[in-house]
Amino acid sequence: MGRGKIPIKRIDNTSSRQVTFSKRRKGLLKKAKELAILCDAEVGLIVFSSTGRLYEFANSSMKSTIARYSRTKEENFQGVNPVISEVKLWQREVELLRKQLLNLQLNHRQLLGEELSSLGVEGLQGLESQLEMSLHSVRKKKEQVFADEIQELNKKGYHVHVENIELQKKFALLTQENKELQKKAQQIKSDNHSAGLSNRIVVANIPSADIPVNQPVQLQLFQPIHQEKDNQDETPKL
Image (cartoon, rainbow, N blue to C red; front, top):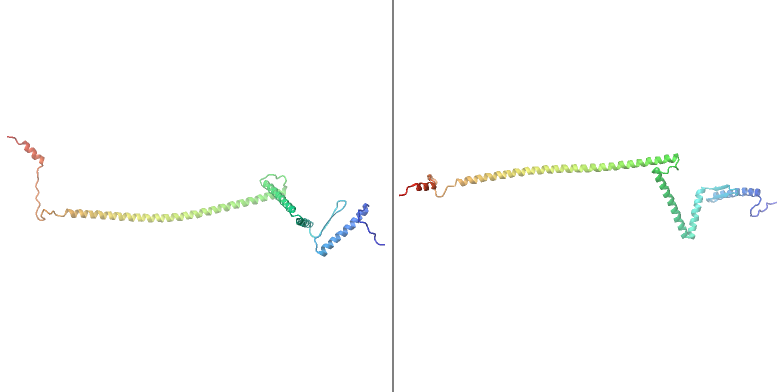
């Protein structure tokens, strides 16, 4: 006799239902494996029994398969209603950004030494390592800034030193020129003084036109005029 055909409906007998579930589950898993191997398909199978027990099969990763399923479903849904799909996309983006913001705020407060109660020993050690690395980076950056400033000051000092040397050379040159000009001025003054004496000597030696050169000069003394008047006043009147 052949096996009787079982009607497709819920089996009321608990033991029969359990036996049928066990047999069909094994067959379903076998068919899923064969489909994945023969057809190079990505298969993910999830089965929950009536008692809540989980049975699953995935030829790759169940997580990646579920993510691919969700992504493909959304893409198909986008083709049907692009407006709703875009809204869902932006909602997911906003939710993701909100979670990232909350994580960054929490990390920032923990770096400041706040809200550390949720961290264990490993978390505190990781936070300490992160702070040490940050402090090392800050110190390295500070040293680099100081080194750059020192190098810039050295360059400025060198340029100032070169300019100082050039100014000293110009000052020495101007001092030398000033000395030469003073010597020239003194020489000119001395020449002018000598020329003035020669002119005065020449003028003093020029003979007068009224007196002969070879005739001796006779000198005669005269009494002052006021004495003659006094003598005249003393003469007795007749």
